[in-house]
Picture 1 (cartoon, rainbow, N blue to C red):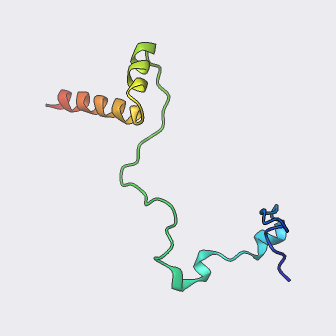
Picture 2 (spheres, rainbow, N blue to C red):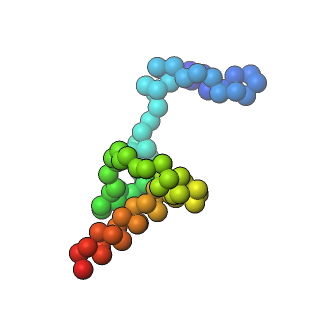
Length: 86
């Protein structure tokens, strides 16, 4: 018999090893294939993670511009690379 995953108050209880063993994989439900999104699609040219040391005023400048500051740094560097190729 399957024990409920919630307790009397409706809180989700801690799952047991047996709970995990009894779970089915999405592939066990062919009728759901294509309906359930399983993560982000893989990019053809994914970005690489790195560590870079920047002067504090450069980092402060980009961070002050808000969300997307890392992408903006990438775009500035890409513009520079493109200008060197011309």
